[in-house]
Image (tube, rainbow, N blue to C red):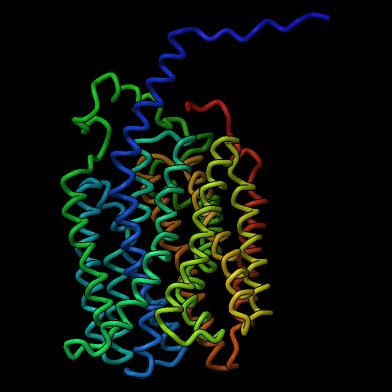
Length: 443
């Protein structure tokens, strides 16, 4: 029997691989912490309204429909200003533009303490969406300048796990502030929560401005050979039919297909995060502090699932099924939760499945647009997918609030959202088989 010759790897190839691993490790440790904690604060500031509702609903006369509409109108502002924001980021650079975004949303988040009617609630939630517009797609586009596709999903997973960590930190923190500071200094606990949770964005904006570099060639902490290595390994050939202009991106049917997929993810994730405290409260947990602690548990599960799903996707260089399976898990969790609305433990378990699946599906998803977008087309395309897809974040909380007001129950709305998640998973399965399954890229 003929024996196969052993695979020969030269010393120079091994050294090059070791050098690359060392360089990318430094890049991750340089960029990841500040971007990660920026996203953590952003998620806390956009979702803490779910806890404020428990106290402010009776104080300013919010029905569930009004709350759902106001919570979701954030994403209308996000939608309208996402694309312009991402184009400005490309023009002015990530360091300056992301810092500007953080200052804007920090100020608006603090001003949420002045809400005194449904109208002011609508206005400030809309302005918060305008202020935050461009953050996540801006970070994703920024990573196109630093990381090859095969490394990007893991990094995006780290950033996305910030949404889960925001629930772990933000839930107990919001509950504690609201419980302990109620009526302190003549303000409600929910007002103090908005003020104290808005301030960190202003501090982090300054830190980011002085530490972030827009591209490898701007990084003084990399040597010239290291800069050349990073630039050489970027995805300069995304795939056949790549679009590198705004018009080309807009004419791509695949872009709008991906937009629907992201819409399904946003509908599942946002609906759960904005209503999770109320769902826990409705299951029989009356203490706002205890509700805050319990709400952190699904996010712990989400961090674990996101890590393993993204790691598996990058190791196998396969992204389609790593989007499909988590979305189906999220749908199953949502439907199952409707059978345990008055059982706190069982309901939390099902909601943990739902939230974990919805969050874990996102990082592998963001590996797909780079298959056919580059340059200005990538900046505009990522922004369009994020902005339009995030309209699911408007639809789902409004749907839940409307159904609760009309029927007194939440189950029908959760079934509809589960159906949207399943439709999104089917849409991923219908993509061409070469999308999300490439080999031969640099590692």
